[in-house]
Length: 376
Image 1 (cartoon, one colour):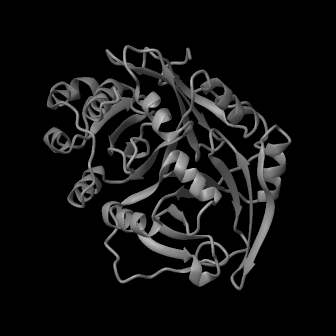
Image 2 (cartoon, helix red, strand yellow; image 1 turned 135 degrees about the vertical axis):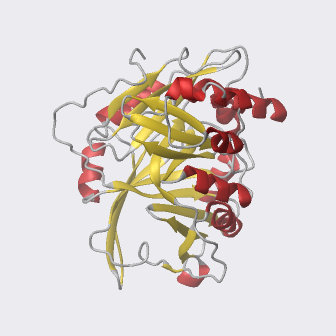
């Protein structure tokens, strides 16, 4: 926890035993996949891609797959009682179950991680249909979250075997979301170092940056965080844990309502955050608001930027700078009923960091929402 926010920690000069091409898909277990799909289409501009359920031979669940550029979101709901999916929803509410990682060799990924201590979820399994075959394997990570390794070089289908194209008449336009920038996990007290060690030893990640409770704190609450990244930098997983404060922090609130560790937020990138956020607001997405005086000294803090200050103020978009450039970011309110999962919209203009200069304003905004919920 002694590394400054803008200090990059070099990776060990070793062979990458777990080469990752990127995020393949994110699967959420939800109470009503059909309605959730409608929400993400309407509010976030995701496009319908694929479906699996009763009409494709599944009897216990159905899944809707949405896509926007390189982001694939899978929404899965149980169709019968007493399933593992249903129990996950009972405990956690709607939430992320699987963070799937695109690999060239799912068998090697499974072997390399399990021999380093990963707990297996399922062994390499080949799934086939007329469009070819996909190999998938999976391991456990924090809480009930899993990582699925997906090898799809021999597959030409729409998504995965036994999914069919989903082409409804309702197809709102996209909103310019491009790819998953990073995904943040919240873990329990004194568990951050355990899980950063997991990513380092089991998956070959290195620590990019570390924040302690002096970096991420307000008058009332605090948390600690470390950012883990794979060798090529395409996968970045910040890991948060609570820190002692006068009141209940956002991480504590998450852990209480989620029922343990899990994915807190998904950061998705855009090339034009002003247009993206304007479009999302017009479609009903609610974002955290920061005090207007945040913008009064913005240029003094971050220097010259391309955007008009008043445009950023009107939309509550935050700005921060590091040695490489600057970034713009904004955070939605929770997108599910429990105060757990939310999204970050981010545009990077050279910056490689995570907005340390915005932490105080952001967490004070979260605290205001907690106070309204009565959970601060």
